[in-house]
Image: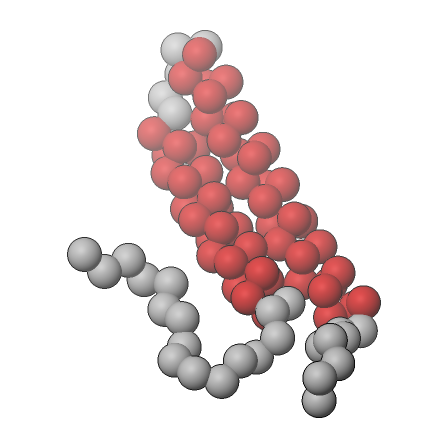
Length: 83
């Protein structure tokens, strides 16, 4: 009580490293889709795959960031956007 909350370094680095690793395939797929488009080839499927991979990587990064935060009492934070 009254001391800073300390986490083992693996608790921080492992989820964040995993999130970084998940963004690499999304980046490569996006570049492939752009290359196909720039060279006049059909890029619709590649674009959709890249978009899906990027969304999955973003959700993984959000989950990783949340997992590094200490638990607090009070209402939970919801990541959904509500108007």
